[in-house]
Each structure stands twice: as C-alpha cells, then as structure tokens.
Length: 480
Image (cartoon, helix red, strand yellow):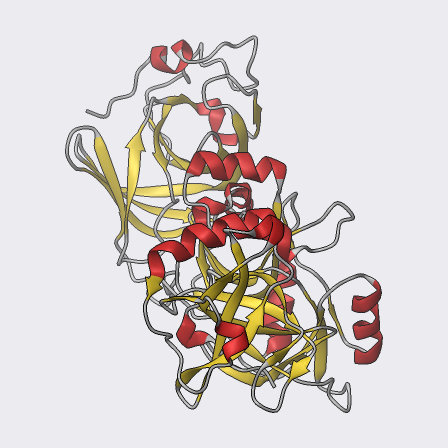
C-alpha cells in the first residue's frame, strides 16, 4: 500500500546523516496540500537504475526503475517501490559514499510537474511534463510488492526498440583508393569484431557469428553505465595490448573463449581489453543504417565515448598514404578506407570499405593436425588447413609456427573430441604434408599470416595467429 510516512522513519533508518550528503529527512514539509512536482534521478549504485519520484502529501513517493521509463507504448518496465523520500531530495545531486546505502553517483536526469489522473493503492496514473519526459504513464502493482511502469500515450510511437541482432558489415581486401576525395581512413586494429548493444545502461556484446560474449569481457560492462539512458548499437573491435602498448592478437587469445565469470574477472586484471568503437548503428530509438558514413561518424563522436576500457579512435580525411604509413610506424595492422557517403550494409562485404594491410592474413578452417617432434613430441606439431573454393573446403597447406604453449594446450583440448577417420577436404593431398595426420571435423576457424598464394592454392610460409571463435566456417572467404 502506498502511503506517505510523516516521519520518514524508513528513509532515516537506512542513512547516517554524518556520512552521506543526502537530506536528513528529519522534518516533513509543512502543510497538508499535495504538490505536483516529479524528479527522475540517474543512480549509479551497485546496479545502475533510475529513481522516479512523485511529490505527494509532503514527501516524494519513489520507485527504482532498472532500465528507466519506457519511451513507447509497447514496453513495460519493472519499477521497484522504495521508501518515501523528503521533498528536499527533489533537487539532490551528488556522490553517496561507497559502503553507504545506495552508494554511488546520483545525477538529476529530469524534473518537471505532473497532472494526476488516478492514485490508488495499486495504480498511479500521471501525465508528466518534464524537459526530457513528456507523456502519460501508469504505474501498476503486479504480484507481491512488484510494480511495472507503462507508457499510455502515442508520444513514443516513432521510436524503435534496440534491435536484437545486427550483422556487422565487412570490408574487402585491396589497395588505397586512387584519390582521397570522398574517403575517410581509420586505423585497422588487431582485435576481434564485436557489436555492442546498450539498453537501459546494460551492455550486451555479440560476436560476428552472433554469439553473446558479454561474460568474457567484464571490464567493458561499465561502458553501458557510461552511456546511461542512451540506447544504442555500436560496431567496434575488442583489442588487447602487449607490454609496449601495441595491439596484440596473441594476448587476446586467452580472453576470447572464456565463459566462466570468475575466470573472466581474473583475466581482465591480468590482460585487460579495450572496446574501440568505430560506428553507430542505432541511437536514441532510431536506426542509423541508412545514414552516410560521415553522418554516422559525427553522431558517434558526439557520444563522447572515453573511458578506461573504451574509446572512439580517430577517423582521418587523408592523405590515405600518410595514414597507412603512420599505422606501420605505430605497429598497427593497416588501415580501412571508408567511402564518406556509404550506408551501413548489415551482413554484407562491400567495396565501400577497403582494408589495406601491411601483412597478408587469411582466415582458415582447421581440418587436421600432425604430431610434433622434439619438445613438441606427443603434441600438435602443425595444423592442416583448408579454405572454401567453389563451395567446398580445399586443402590450403599446413602451419607449424606462431604457436604459444597456451595455444597448443587449448588447440589440443578443442581438437581431441573432433577426430574423424577421413579428411574433410576435396582434391589431392600432398603425402609429405599429411603423413601421420589426425583429421578433425571442419568446425574451428583460425587465422594465419602468410607471404603469398602458390599456384596450386597453398599458403606460402604461413604463421599461426590464433583461433577466431567469432567466425563460422561458412563465413570464411579467400582474401584477394
């Protein structure tokens, strides 16, 4: 039952006035008339939420809304009824010390007044008139003490929910454009692609093959809180760095497969990652896909994404050759040239984006392995590789260098249950390559660096870079 508590005893019992900057709540506002102000406060406590408070009978009747008020009529959101707050709280903003009740930063998100349509023990219906929120809302009790909040009017009907999945756009391999006109240039980062979905301050990370990898990167979750109430979908790269501060795909390997939260937290301390956002696909309830790259880029930069584990790396107007040279001197992989007027094409590989790399790399399908010698006896000596040609996996050579001890252990564990009797590739196989081979189901995708393709379709001097759990075998293409 909702009722104002004249002495605000519950409020005071949870707070120590000598340790928190919040109003003491020792005195109730004078007079029995009920005002009609409201406030919404963004509260970065242990879990981000929005506190929604309505002035009523000299106090602020309050709810904690984990994802904020819904912006359209199609969404109900949980609202936890909390203790009444003193009227002085209506303009409170500040930091509640850690360890105190509700510890964290409180930000004034919106204020205004409301028109009351109904107030009962189980339902409160109001029309809000604020700077950011303007519309008709109803709070209603469900089971027990749980409440929900629903938008009643049509004000948010043009708003689209954050999509569940947007397949990332891909670049083609090639050379720098002949002219810089109409192009922008970004550094190519040696990481793993991930699309970030933020809704109600909660982050969800999806790999290129549609796998939820949020648990693997706990240090990135605070990016959702940093964006707060701004729902968005970002495209970017998850990158780990070596001791010299350069991107390291090898360092990223041990972070890419972790599904156990405790281990992910430990690894985040030892090998932290950063999310480098280079595109925005959805923002504030509207799709950005059809906008030209230069406009999407402007909106991305306006978000001000800067944190300990997330950044928006620069986009350069050119000259492309100078950007490419700068990437080489910085130890980066290369550049991506992007056509200024191009839309975002989900799930498509487009010549509107051209990747220019200093070292040739190729995604490959692991189809088997041969045993090692010497210190690698009884372990993997080399991997047997394939790439798709004419719709079938064709043998593309073997790779025996570039492995760390961790990689060899991990590959051994992953390949053991995939053994099969026959090779899963078509075409002739060189006897010298496959002597003593153990064949496996073609389900694991990796990446190699190499010099060139031989005439018979083999990789010359490949070096292993690591597994690509963000890719399925059907997504592998032969780079030009």
